[in-house]
Length: 548
Image 1 (tube, rainbow, N blue to C red):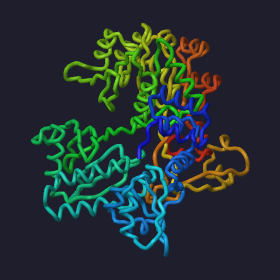
Image 2 (image 1 turned 90 degrees about the horizontal axis):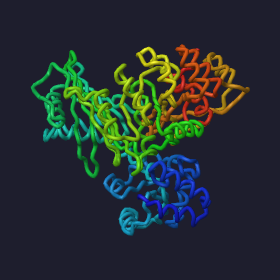
Image 3 (image 1 turned 90 degrees about the vertical axis):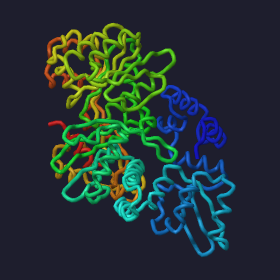
């Protein structure tokens, strides 16, 4: 059940779960970041999810159950009919001889107990409150594997292609996948999802159905169905139940046939504040200080899929206000944001990043976002825009923050222009976070860990510490991970750094100066998140190994 900010404020204040001072701080953060009060309170660590759940439960005069810490087993959950569980958003959590306990995120519905009493007329019914996201996690138990649903659809032989696509998309959205891969391999079609940055197989379909599936996708994406030997790109707006899902489609010919990759442009990004991205308080302060400058350039760097665009959108949410003119040129437009003028780059009409940026400057913007600085022409126009009274945001491909400065100079930008305009450089990566449902602590001997990973010896001190990992459960598909968080490396401009840039420094020279100014590497930021129980050491080493 959704609560508006006013209701949540009354609940928290009335039950003294949050002080008036913290509520006002949360409300100010919510206004600044354009998010809900709950998101702001959680992002600012002014309340925990457990306390939030307890407060809401008290408003309903029922108990609170933390399903993430006490997940009921699958065989118990599925005793409740699937139709009722999904429609009423209710989960069976305990059944004893005289009593039945269920959890829901809306205990106030008058019809709920009446319907449940019909199932257990002679037993006492206890209804408790659980957070909506935890209810969603448990309801996954009712979905049979995608492969079984494929088989059922193929056996019916009615509207095969639309139903297959619906099932694939619904599973991908439920899994919070970022990408769907549909790949012809031999005599089968393999469907894979990328979840939290990692691909896994979701199901297989006999290849004889591939042509109708492929044609259906092409038609929805408005692509040529008679083209089989050239790459094609399109977009789909898929309506499913009460939601609309925007998707970007790419089709390329391979040896076994045409491969489909679909990027799900869901509204996950709207949930993010700077804090929830994984930025520390110090990094947030540095970023906000740079963003408050009347002009200058903020660059975010990292490989494809490292969350650069999400970070820039989170920052634009902070800057987005009626008195601020924000204009972007992107390829593609990932998310549509109210109040921001967004332009889709189109090389076929000569609307490149460089040409679009020239036009944007004549539109009297305060803040300009360029999807990516790819070449000297775009870099020079971006630098000039930052010099002439605009705050310019963009992404840049480099391995780390220190490499950005020498790379810009190598592209032909004069060092004095880089020094004059660059305000902040951020490098980032994404690591999977430990699943909240199955997370367990594990005391470890740091010397033993250092023997396995000798390169981290200087980052871990002491004889023993407690690290964390996920055991694997239904909520995380047995991986032990659910969701991702960012690792960040930030270099801020100072007079000393500007002086160094004028001497055309190497990457090593830039990083040495940055460390002297207090910058920390991606790995060091990750070590803090490992110690805090947000991710594992293995995941950190996979994504961001320590600098040599």
